Image 1 (cartoon, one colour):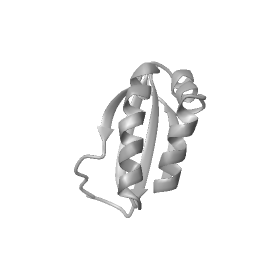
Image 2 (tube, rainbow, N blue to C red):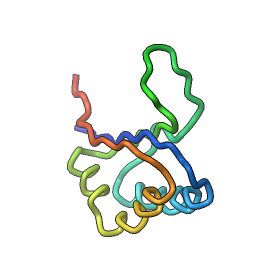
Image 3 (cartoon, rainbow, N blue to C red):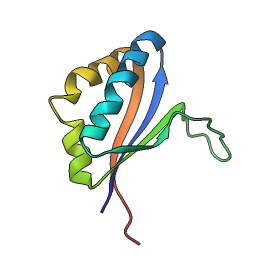
Image 4 (cartoon, one colour):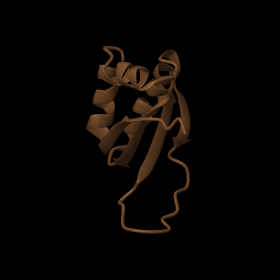
Length: 97
């Protein structure tokens, strides 16, 4: 069953965040992930959820999503995100229906 990494990101240092974006995409692919949503236009239609830049990554499993997030390869790249943005990140198991 697929696993997802969902992030809500509020960028406050665009230059540093651009470095993060350039480095994270190849890592996502290396860990078997793919972008479903990557900060596209967002339209609030209900409620007050403070979504800024929404990112949804799909991995083959929740284990693989966690392996990416906790990896030694991602750790220095994550530091770029932490230095340039406020983020809420969740790992979620997919629905098998």
